[in-house]
Length: 258
Image (cartoon, rainbow, N blue to C red; front, side, top):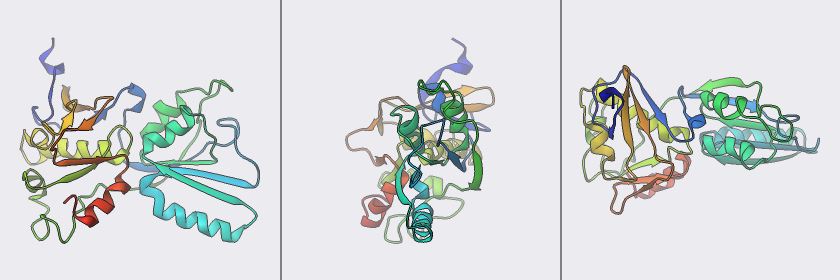
């Protein structure tokens, strides 16, 4: 086996210049952190009645889209607006796997659209689930902590990664199989290894925390993170995983995670 392509426990790697996260099947691989809107009405998904407007969007879009839905309902009370939110990958699979109809779909990662919708055909129509989309916003990854938590008053821009390795710190992460924020978080940690010259950072944060283990693979000048199709945290893990990032906020407020 080529030593450059061997899988190993997360964190045991040479310093990467870039990171990617892969979860089988390959069509769910992702890259840039962008927010998009995609119309999936009509030929792509069947569409709903003319007086119904059905929206489905990534959990990070709940607050703005709930406001938009309320404003739309006030402006046109004759239209029934229904909304639903999940992790970005789950949002897409509601359409492609479960074959539900929506008028607007919003995902937090534009590069999910190509492999999961443009390259996949609706078995009823023979057409791709998507043939166009709009990039309408960008976002940033952030480390969120409570003023009452163990990290309060200690976190800086130069030590945050080291504080996360403290065994007394409980870290929350969105499920990387379903939510863009989840696999992005793993990518941020992998890139931090290179940035802060700590080649065991990801290993310290993930080894023994997940079952089966999350692994990394050196590919060229970068690292690919492999997330098992079946994934759970181990007993006694200091990592708390939820299906969507929005579900972690109540745990942060209650002190269940730091």
